[in-house]
Length: 212
Image 1 (cartoon, rainbow, N blue to C red):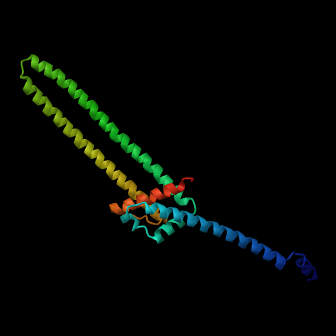
Image 2: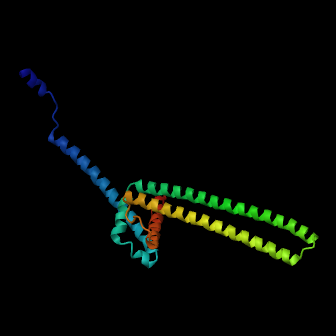
Image 3: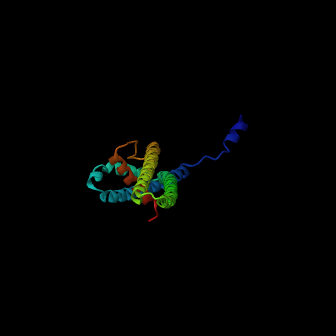
């Protein structure tokens, strides 16, 4: 028994003064960290207030103190900035792909019209050589071109509708992502005013993410 007791007594026991120093150091670090976060929150909140003040009055009214303060708090780490940056990259890629698809349709239509004009020119020469009335030939070819242009416009309308649908889906995906991330002001909505307000908030976040 004495043997065990002697072993136990060899362990160092921190003195109360050492504990006090350790706790004091931790407490000071925590206070310093907390103060830095408070300063950053105030800085972000002030910047958000300045940006909001530049918006039309009807949008300013929908950005109360509490919303801007909570948004500033959500920006204290880089998570939201990274999410918004990623969403923006995806949006730019989608928009580029949609633009390229529409451009391809326009180029195809242009080539088709050039072929039609070439064909009509050859037909006109042949018809006039055969004694056909130039006025009748020109009217018939004009009607053919107008019908082709109408088909082109209908095709472009379908392409544009697909683009709009895709962009709407992109907006909805962004809303879902930001809402799940807990970013204040973001939720799924089809309201044009709410969407515009969210676009302003995204603009604020993007501007704050840039180094000053």
